[in-house]
Image (cartoon, rainbow, N blue to C red; front, side, top):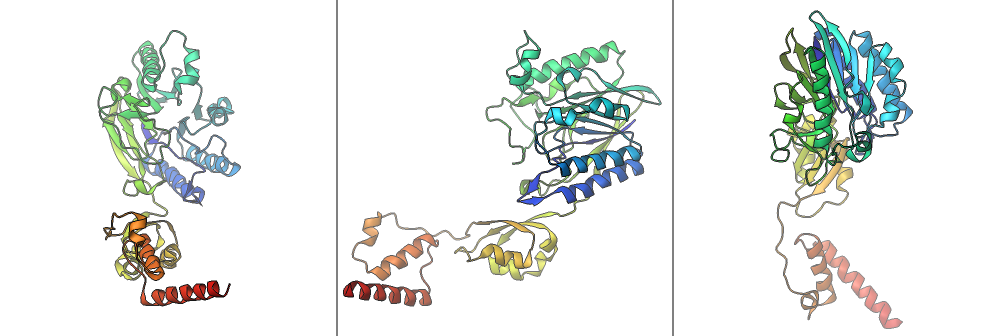
Length: 392
């Protein structure tokens, strides 16, 4: 059986105020092409299908179109819910969808009820663990301690292992949406998270040790937006689009997983197209506007770090004159002036009004005082103010 492992579609997410629906649609279209070209039997989506618990109609349209194409390409689809999803909305009509080969697993009681898909060697069991918030599910399992995600998922995986054992050890695949650390002991080393994973909790409450997932032939993880291999059969696929400049260098794609007669055979990476790449440019404004080596970034989403000693006036508009898709700008001067530590009153002592204004400009402009034209204007304004006061 050949499986394509994806996750974290985040349909409906914006990127610095820009809709990502069109770009995501392009990538999801490419998944259907991969299904045909690579003869994929099952596509799995390990949570965060939507970016919001209340997705707009357009987001449902994108999901419906993507799933329709996957089924037309010949693949079954297995989906589970993530922390961004509304389990109720995503799972609505899932019973009927299952009759068409689209299996959506969002309820806790479904976690040890596998979707069974046969290949030439027999059945493969697909278990979906929806995102389980301990505070919201512990009442379902009285007598089981569930204060942390590690405890919830440990209990879920034990139920799954028990079910696998009852089925004569059939091959199995688990989908889970969690923040899994790659060293047993939950907390010593973690998969790298981007700034998009907004809900990762300080203190380790959400961390789950990789050994919790021992047993299945393959574990398809979601939640982290970059690909990661925690063990040969335990992997993150990452998100299909770049949703943050922190992800700019991370490849976008999915894992192509082959199961043979006895279990996991091979895993290889398949790249997705990147409709609009991300670029982070650093330098002085004049350099960024003139240097031909930045030509490739003119069609990218761009984040700019300006290193001018003085923050340029109207910097974003000027940057966008060359990079129309620039969406973020920060000022980090390469030269930082060492300003005097004297108190404000000490700095003003025995100084003229013109010197006070010049000192203020020097303070707020990283050590750069007024230009000659600005000095003339300061003198003119102070003189005019003094004249008005003298005639009042």
